[in-house]
Amino acid sequence: MNFSRFLLHSSRIAFAPQFLFWSIAIAICIPTSAQGAEAKNLSVVQKNLGENPANTTSPGKAADLLPVAIPVPPPAFSAADANVTNQPEKSHHEKSPSQKEVLQPNNSPDAEKKSHVEGEKLQPKKQPIKLQPSRNSEKKSGSHGKKHQHEGNSSPLLVPSKPEEVQIRENQPLTLEQALEIARNSNPQLKTAILELERSRAGLKEAEAALYPTFGINGSLTESKSAQDSLSVNSGIAPPGSDKARTAFTGQAEINYNIYTSGRRSASIREAKERVKISELDVETRFQEIRLSVTTRYYDLQAADEQLRISAAAVENAQASLRDAQALERAGVGTKFDVLRSQVNLANSQQDYTNARSRQQISQRQLVSLLNLPQTVNISTAESVKIAGLWQQSLEESIVNAYQYRQELQQRLAERNIGEQRRKFALSQLGPQVALVATYDVLDQYNDNTGVTDGYSVGVKARWNIFDGGAAKAQASQAKANIAIAESNFTNQRNQIRFEVEQYYAQLQSNLENVQTATAAVEQAQEALRLARLRFQAGVGTQTDVIAAENDLTRAQGNRVTAILDYNRAFANLQRAVSAKV
Image 1 (cartoon, helix red, strand yellow):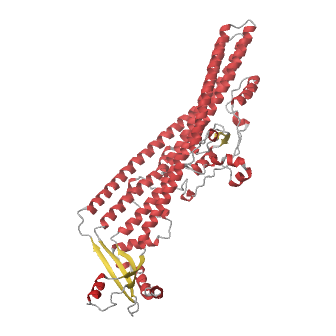
Image 2 (image 1 turned 135 degrees about the vertical axis):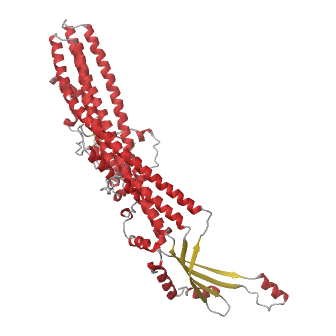
Image 3 (image 1 turned 180 degrees about the horizontal axis):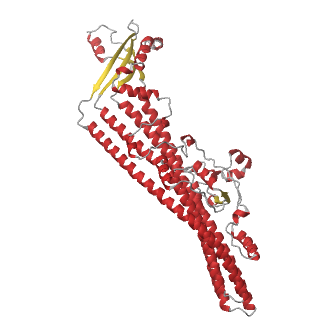
């Protein structure tokens, strides 16, 4: 009986719709003109609620520290790229014969043919593979799909437990652009930065929730029997039956809205927006750093490949010299000493080749680790060694562009703005706090021959923390110190950026000159080796001259490759220093 009555009366928990309507209308539509100094700030914040937080910034006074303006450049990695998948771009490129034979020495025709044949034996064959097969292809492949199931890096917590799971079975040639795309899609550091950006955006939504009123309801259904009533009945003081259990229902709806917070609410929202801006800039900075790391590792692998090729050519030249020395000895015009010298030179060249092959393997695994590729995949370069590009800007233009486009400077300004908002937040604790509070109550006592009773209250609640022992002022002082630290970091970052631009610009110019010098030296060394062999075969030269010419050619080829790759590294570092698009 009581339960059915409870259901009947609970249907009345509309809580006076007309009262709730006017309470919510009063809470939301309070005239902003009556809110004092904070009302103007709140109107601006509420106007910008529909805008993208990434495009809302609070200018800081530290901008005056910069000799030029700092416009926000077109980002190399926009925040829209946060939807990153784990599917790298598929590559089916292989080195063409012309790419494999770059910087080959111009020896005799027979030596070139043998060099090409033996070079193919020394170099592992490059077969294109699919780095991450799709789900459909895995289903079609049957057992083969299960075999490579662990190679897709589907779980970041996967640890191989069998030797065949880490055995390298495939080799993938990659261009630099393909390597950069894979790093963009699968690098763990970049994923961490994107997750931090999502966390900052969630924090902004939490701060903006203070712009709206809070509404809540609570209720209770209790059945109670008083011990005092039972004692009174037993003593005859009260009439029999007055100690029966009582069932009651109570309910309450409450709405709260902070009308005035002395600037605490607006300061909290602006701080959250600055943190979102810092996170967005951090994503761009991480991508620039990863791009530079991948580019540098790719050039290191190119250097290892070329050193291996040069070492293989040196072995072939040493073998040719040994054959010439042995032929002259059999003809009676050569000496045993020349043969021994050639054998020693061949042994040294073979050791250099072994060391070069080891360095190539190390460079390959370093790049695989950076790209976060599957355990069974190895990679190789699919591009020949060449100049990456020419820098078209002067030193002064490069410095100014770096000041405009470097994300680190904008991050320092955002940190300063955060300190300013933290200072305002701390001081707001000493100001008055005014809130609108409205409640609606329902009470129903069952078995009392009385219907449901209700009531309401509407009021304004104010609080003013006049003295807190100096805690708020101490927090404001800490925030002020953080502002000064951010300004100092801005100055240090600006000086560091200029130094980086000047450093890599100087390296770029010197390496460009070295490339021209080394190219001429290679041509001269090739001609010198050709003449030395002709002189030795004619009996007017010595084996020492041939060996020296071979060593000079090997050194000249290595210097040219080093000069080109050093130029490319300086070019990549200068692009990073200016934050220019590659």
